[in-house]
Every structure is written in structure tokens, then in C-alpha cells.
Length: 358
View 1 (cartoon, rainbow, N blue to C red):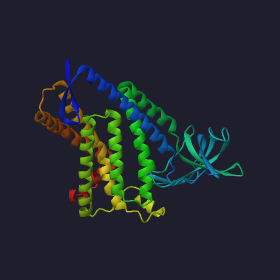
View 2 (spheres, rainbow, N blue to C red):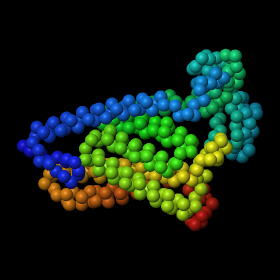
View 3 (cartoon, rainbow, N blue to C red):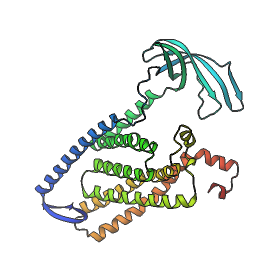
View 4 (cartoon, rainbow, N blue to C red):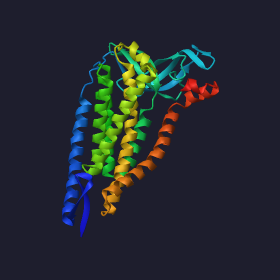
């Protein structure tokens, strides 16, 4: 029995024997394992790499989990929908060096619904503790404590991914961790240091795309085609974002919290270039997904029907691409609409003209 397999490129087929096929398959599995190990080492290295923005150990403060025992709202004033003033709470610290200590904590309300938190007895809160001479000086209520629930949900996500996808799921988790660390340890710090956001984002997207696809799919023509397609799409998106971003004269200050960034001492940062970079960073995931879908589908077609010609395989890929692209367009629309649903409601309630929205 003989089998057709892909070699060197998606349109070059090599007729090999059964033994050679299984030898190549085992070699591919070994290469996946070795690459996963290499990425695991890289992840460990990224984890310990300093960003350059660490402030070191703060001997004058720490954070802890606390239970709200009592609340005093006598200093809280209501003005329509918003509240301002200070909510004084009696809390019991349940973690850290001051565990089981009861103390007063203060919740400053700034009159902003999206930032203010109101606590009631029984709530678990994240508190900031100012320390002086190894004693509690002042306690601030930061937010509701959600870390345990977040860890539970993430653990459930990891478990289900591994149960469903096996070792592929494990490699997907590695790619997830690699992506998080690349963004937090490389992309964001270099943005803050003033490096060109567009070029830096292209390099990071290229690295993330390559590593993610190779981790999940291994070293095969299927992966190479997906990488090539995804990076080509990212490059084209980048070019369009640069060209039309300049033409539309959109300032990067439209980004949320951009003013806070400027007031924090980073006035020299080019917010417009960061805005443009954010456009194709956001699209990179969808492009990678689309490229992998088409490449994997065509690969399976060739695997199941070795007699197919290169022209027919390309035609099948285009057909699959048109079908996937049709649903992907709606997917992106729903994703962005969901993120801006409140803004769309404001436009609707005020009967904002379409020209103003656009």
C-alpha cells in the first residue's frame, strides 16, 4: 500500500511507501514535542525578563483579600445616578501578613459609574494596605475580589481544552501563554519606551502567528501555508491601516485611557501610530484563524484524495475561503458591536445622524 503525502509545498506531492509515511509521521510528532519544549523554555525566560517598569518591592504597602464586616455610608452623597464621598467599611483581612486583623478601610467614590464600587457586608474585597513601621497605617478598598473565580474559570477552560483536544490542547495553552507574555513583556514595554509601534507590532504579530501555528499544527506544509497566508493578510491590513489612518486624520487619543497615559509622563508617545498598530493586531487573530481553516481543509482534501491536481486543490481552497469569509465577516461585526453596544445605544437614543457616527 502506498500513500500520497505533501512535501515541500502544498502543491508538490510525493509518492512514498507505507513505512516511509509512518516514519515521517513519527518524526513530525517528535518535532512538535521538541518545539513545544523550546517554547516552554522561552515562556519561562519571558516570565522572568524585567519590563523595565518595575518599581521593586514596596516596603510601605501591600495588597490583601479582606471580608467586609460593616459599612458606614453616612459620608456618601448621591447626585442623580452617581455617588461621591467616602464609604467607610470595617473589614477583616483574610490573607497576607495581616491575616485575621480587623481594621477600617476607606472606599473613595469619584462620581464615575464605571469606576466606583459600592460594598455591602459579606463582600470580599481587594484592599491596599499602607504600612508604617510594620503596622497598618491606612487601608483602601480597591475592588471586589474576583481572583478565585477567575482562576476557577481559567482552570475549567484549560481542563476542557485538554480533555477535548489532548496534546493539541496543551500546545494551544502554551501558545496562549506565549502570546500573553509577548504582549506584556515585549509589546507594551517597547511601546512605552518609544519604539515605532507599527514596525514593532508587525514583528510581534509575525512571531505570534508563526509560533502559534507551528505549536498547534506542527512543521508541515499545512502550517507553512497558513503562516504565509496569515502574515500576508496582516501585512496588507497594516498597509491599509497606515494609508487610510492618515487619510481619515484620526488621532490616537480616541483610544481609551490614552489621556491618562499622557498625563502619566509619556507625552512623547505617538498615540496615532499605536492606534494604527492596534488595528492590525486586533485583526491578526481572525486572519490566523481563517488561514488555518483554509489550509487545514485543503490539506484534508489532498490527504483523502491524492489524485487531485494542484489546480483543483487551489480551486477547492478558494471555494472554502469564500464560505469561511462570509461567516467571518459577520463574526467580526458581532464582536465589535458587542464591545461598543453602550455607545450604539447612545447614538440611537440621541437620534445621532449617520454622518456623525461615521
